[in-house]
Image 1 (cartoon, helix red, strand yellow):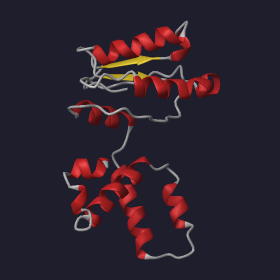
Image 2 (cartoon, rainbow, N blue to C red):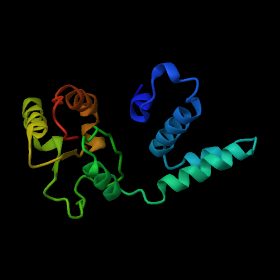
Image 3 (cartoon, rainbow, N blue to C red):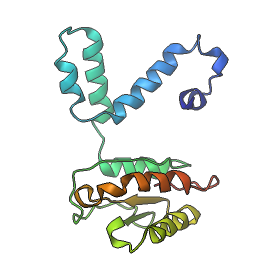
Length: 166
């Protein structure tokens, strides 16, 4: 449904626009694919042009993809969608947000005394007019049990009129 909405295509015209919707969905899936996606594709037994095209599309989409690019792209959107981005940085590593330090706030769940306090921070973020993007950095080795709760908070505490994202 998001593809139809984004492309401004009526659900009733989907037979005529099938290729457009398929291409849009393919790009979204390739963009969110893991870094070993081309490797998996290259190991396919049937080495046809479709696989080569997918690998080429993957590299075209990912050639300028970095964490700072993701942040800049999000901040340039009128409404920031919630995203989950996995990085391999250590929790104590500093992430530079390049010229956007005033628009981005970073929190770490381990620094909160209670779930209520974290919920309050997320609610305040959605109401904020100063910051646009809240980054929640999770130390997966220590805090993996809280990931589902975080997803629940991010999805359910969002204010419909807010243009901020997490």
